[in-house]
Length: 626
Image 1 (cartoon, rainbow, N blue to C red):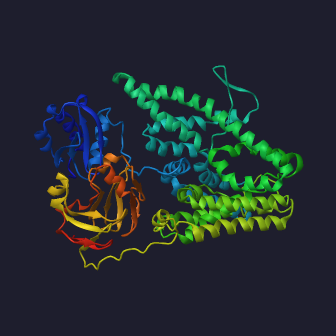
Image 2 (tube, rainbow, N blue to C red; image 1 turned 30 degrees about the vertical axis):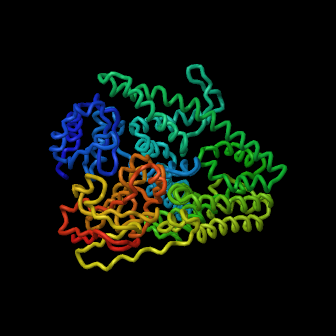
Image 3 (cartoon, one colour; image 1 turned 135 degrees about the vertical axis):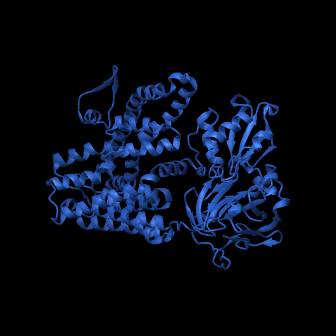
């Protein structure tokens, strides 16, 4: 299959089924293209089955199913490039975000930040080291050396919208270079200068309320989300002769002014309203204002609302020598850093720990929380909430003591001298210490354990579930374990023509008795269907295992499935992959039989599955000789 030209294969399949006009819709599951044809008589099934890269063709459920195997997502992506059927230049196999609106929003932000987390953590750590070097006198802040090093550390944060434009474009299926052009316009020096001036700004006679988009997050994500829809509309509407250059031209002409005319005013007025309300609250109930600032400052930063507070802070420092608004920010920042540090101690995920360690350090030393929030706390949710809780308590205590800052510094341990001369220093330390203790303690004792968090969350408890013990192996042998308890079914008896034929490889079916599906091997998830019904896992030795939950359950479009693992994730044998409502599958009229297949059987020395019997979760069900 490695030598297959997938672009050509997609084109041959398209011709074999009667062309694009004969296809009503196109989709794919873990192994097959699923086409709805207007007239199946126009399809040359024999010709399609003979194509190199096609395993077989099935007709079921009103669909014309072209079985490809593991590379089906690649063929589907190529089909999207040569037709308007899918609109995809690359296939998103990440699990669908479920839960309430807030959870889905957090999952979206986390997935967009995921590709830039490592550079973000590195830049944050560099900023922390530079701050420390300046504090101890090793680096002159006015030196050209510091200018160059500071640029290296600050550039990613300053131009963050440009980086997020790329990852958001991949997420929303937009042209990433057009997305970067939109982001570049938002942080263009002249636009930044317009935001800083006091004179009114207008566009074609329409007043524009400007904001500073550097380091912002939400504006560019919203812009790229809208861009994706707009580009797909233009692709359908414009003639092919002018589409390639007209689509980005029209997109830029409309999207940049649209963002400036809408996002800027909405964000600015919301920020100004929040700032005015909190300043007023400081005069009536300082503890309440401190609780709000301490608890929700990081949320304000996430939405870009923090810029509305900056003028008030600077004005306070200029007129009275200190800013009370600044006081609660110290516990707010350090509580999030403490939650990140607790994750570093608690998590069993090596990749997460590698991010959490330096992210916590940059948070404590330099007040740079972006790596910790976007790479650790926000994706895991609970640490972010626990950090907010710490900030609420710490901010209330600090504000009650009248603490503030005498200069505009990053709230951090290195910036602590700016907080020592205003208000009650003892309460400042008590409040900050309480914030750190709450953020760290709650996360350490009640936060996700990652390897076991999915199981614990689904069960309503943080107590890890016992993992199945792998069967003994010998060199060159891999034991594939049962991902769920149930009754074994020989592959030939599975009610699916493709799986039963062995065309997808050797394996077995399991009629499950429970709805918790675990990883049968240790390896990397290479495919995770967005519907949550199938996962492809590859071991270090190259064994490729498919876990397919139910027969034809892709038709349920994710109903009854809750994915607990994502593409690219490293999993250990026994890690939770999905939680499934078996009753929902049965009520929808589908077979619950879960397939466990070794899809690269032909490349292995031997693959020997069990064919019958009652299985417990973790029993060895397939012996593979590599």
